[in-house]
Amino acid sequence: MSVLSPPPLLSDAELRAAPRHMGLLHRFAEVRAHSLALSAPLSAEDQCVQSMPDASPTKWHLAHTSWFFEAFILQPRVPGYTPFDPRFFYLFNSYYEALGTRHPRHQRGLLTRPSVADVLAYRQHVDAAMAHLLQCCSDADLDTLAPLVTLGLHHEQQHQELLLTDILHALWCNPLLPAYQAAAAAPAAAPAEPVRWLPVPGGTTQVGHAGGGFAFDNEAPRHTVLLSPCEVAHRLVTCGEYAQFMAAGGYQRPEFWLADGWAAVQAGGWQAPLYWLRGDDPRLLARPGVAAPGWQVFGLSGVQPLQPSAPVSQISFYEAAAFAEWAATQPDTAGARLPTEFEWETAASLPGLAQATGTVWQWTRSSYDPYPGFRPNPGAVGEYNGKFMVGQLVLRGGSQATPAGHTRPSYRNFFPPAARWQFSGLRLAKDAPC
Image (cartoon, rainbow, N blue to C red; front, side, top):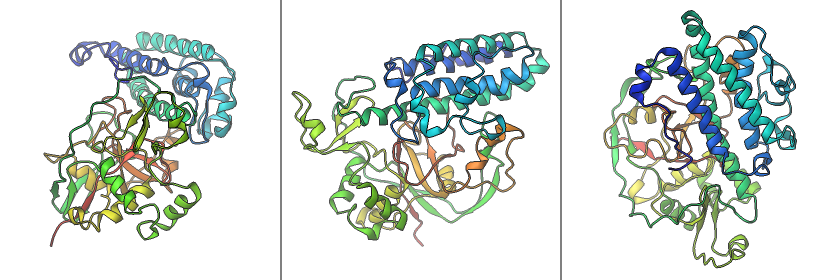
């Protein structure tokens, strides 16, 4: 079984039947074990690398997710709790101003110490303290603890995906193009189906989390929006379709690009999605015994031939928007555009919608703004989402690196429009015919 999807410690039925304390404890152990499994293929040297300011070292992710439980639960709620190392409160705070100063984000790769072994010992210390707390707390205390522990687990799952996207970027920066996890070459995939357009009715509809399970604060409150009738593509845009955009001069034609996007193309020399390699790329030619005609794609399994029917990935919002502008001029996708996040959420319940999750996050045309009536959670944990609600775009769905069960139709991921190291792609939409 792939390290990306470890077996659960308990089945869903067993979790439902377990006492609340034990069910939460088993879920805690399951999520924490998955982080270690994801880091297992990596050397100590791999785990210290920070390839750009937006990425973090694997070791930092492992430590920060432990810091979260220590800073928000153990330190303030367990009398006499002894921190593993008080200096870690400074080293592994990410952006919580209310919890004190922190090591600069862009310098996380300079933390050669503490070692990986020290970080793993830190995790064991936190895990033992959390296990004791969950086993011994009263039912009344559990009512207070459970929401915070659950938030910490979903926070760790977010970092599990970031661990993969960040190490993939680091390995991409290595001239050897090493694989995170070796795998046999994928067989040629069947051609993609022609796009079918699924009608999304207009009118008022409810969006946002409806309750009945975990959600981040940015998914609430549930509220009414007015949609114009539209249509949403039943599948994602493929690599083959994106290659057609490139062949039509997509990266050389400013008429398809937003002004900031065109500036990013020029400044970054963008010519293709981030991890695409031409067959004559020197890094490919230097690989012994590897013939690489045409485009190749670098991923968690290393370099693989481009699969035309696979969803395009590792593109920015700017690239997604430019592709949609070009697609609007093509016969089969005339009038195409990016969906809004509310069109996407409404379409997620339609029969026939494919690849809603598990492949790539899907850029929308919606700015990451607060919902009407949004209020951050009280205390330092309120810094989790609300203060980032400016200058970012919403993505919906979930990617191949997203932990199973982590997403839901109301989930709002968000990144700056130039970000392209995530597993991000697009689905087209268009206005309904009059």
